Amino acid sequence: MWAVYDSSRVRNIVAAAFLASTLGVPCSSVMASWEYIPQEVRLIEADIIVAGEIVKLGKNRKKYGQVYEVGIIEPIQLLKGSPGRGRQIRLAWPQIAPRLPAPRVGDRSIWILRADEILPVYRATYLMDRQPIEKLAELRVRLSEIEDTRWSEPEDGLQIGIFTEQQEMSAAVRLSVYPLLKNAGHEPIFVNLFQRDLPFSILCFAPDGHPMDVPMYGMTQAQPATPQRQHFLQIPPGGIRSIPYGFVLPILTEDGEYSIRVRYKSYREAPELGLNRVWTGAMASPTIAVQVPGREDARW
Image (cartoon, rainbow, N blue to C red; front, side):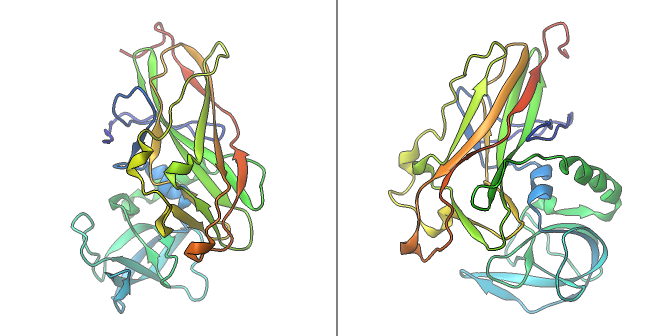
């Protein structure tokens, strides 16, 4: 699947507000969009966002056969999170990463980072995880917007919210939904994303109140018969994680207000994979509203 970038962006924050931009390919059912993740989602799930300078290189690290180079960031300003002990932040990036130019000593950037599950480093994964220092004011504005994200009540330490991104067309809207999961507890937890278990579902109601058919996942037979370790996402205490794709809904064409919420359920534990604290149960996000303009209000 492919995501299409658009220069016109309208923002709304979800789990009660919306955000807009572009995305997606025309579709008749929900699709997984693997090629694109909105920067706002990266900001929401980041453990640390820091403007800083790489003052020296550290010792390379190895994980699952992949070599990571390490740089030491001296913070100029912390925008989110705390590095814990000490002031400096250890940044890791893949040694072979043609789409991510290797940082150099003296580079000043804004870094959008997640803590590694195993190594004592923070990782930058996407090109958008490194921003010019000149964008500091712009990122502050975006961070203030996403603070309005609303969450469900905690269920055994887990909460769910939604981020949406929409492309407004002539009297229609193409909407992408990104479920967000938050660990409200004090211990790391794992969540099951194995597609054969159909963990996510989307409830969408048209302006007249009738439910819309929202097919999910497509051909799950392409998945392995049993889940592997990579199908379980670890969330640290206080951490927020999105699934690595967005669900693109069928095009919304009726003018008026649509109501959308996301459900997550999983009753699979994974002792055979050596995982404890795998969350089980069912929960639903707060309902959000998406407005589709009538023809007289549409932009041509």
